Each structure stands twice: as C-alpha cells, then as structure tokens.
Image 1 (cartoon, rainbow, N blue to C red):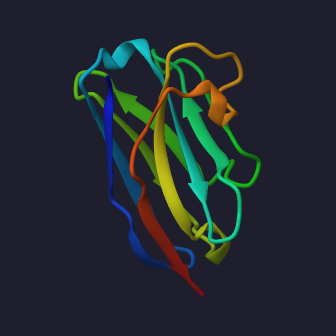
Image 2: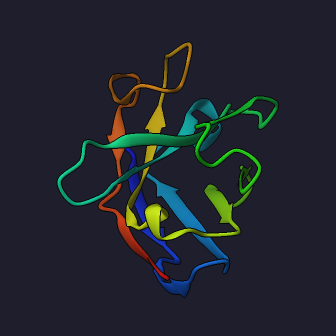
Image 3: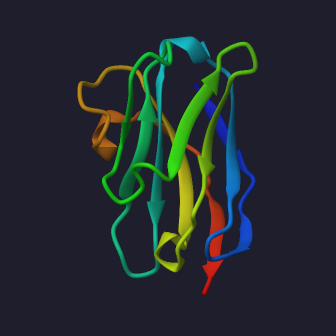
Length: 124
C-alpha cells in the first residue's frame, strides 16, 4: 500500500510560480510512474503531467506544456511539479497519483494510489 502526501499549494498571483511536492511511503517508489491531476469546482479531474519510474519519459497536458515541469527524486521518494506563469484557470485541487502498469499515463484508471490533494489558487 502506497501513501501519497501532497504539499506546496497556496495562493499566488497570476504570472507567479509554485512548486508542488508529493512524498510517497509504504511502497517501492521507483516501481511506479507518477502523475499529477487537478480538479476545479464543478469539473472533472483532469490530467496535468506524468513521469516514468526512471524519469526518462515525461508527458504533459497541452494546457500546461511549457509552463509546468514534472520531476522526481527516487532517493527521496518524492515527485514534484514546478508550475510557472500561472493563470487563474490553473486554480484547482492538485492530486498526486502513482501507477504500476499503464501505457499512456493520461487516464485516471491507470493509477492505483492517490493523495488527498492540495489547493492551488491563482488570483488575477
């Protein structure tokens, strides 16, 4: 059983930056690909970014490409997403997720474990 705890959310002005962290415990971190999703009020959870177990493959939603960067530190059992040039439409609860088997990394059903989420609010 893997436990995931996100941190780093908060309130930021448009154009600003935040770095979210997700600390994993209870499993073998390097065996999992990791993803970030977000969910705004009244909307479905959507894919943001994902990274393979080795870090050699990263994928991004078109809406964040060029502004967000996902990375991981397997020695620290932690995955990060650096968010820059934030926009009000980035406001959401951000969730970290871990998956053991999957091909695209884009879909929620590919992930086995989820964190509780951290709120990111971008003011205009």
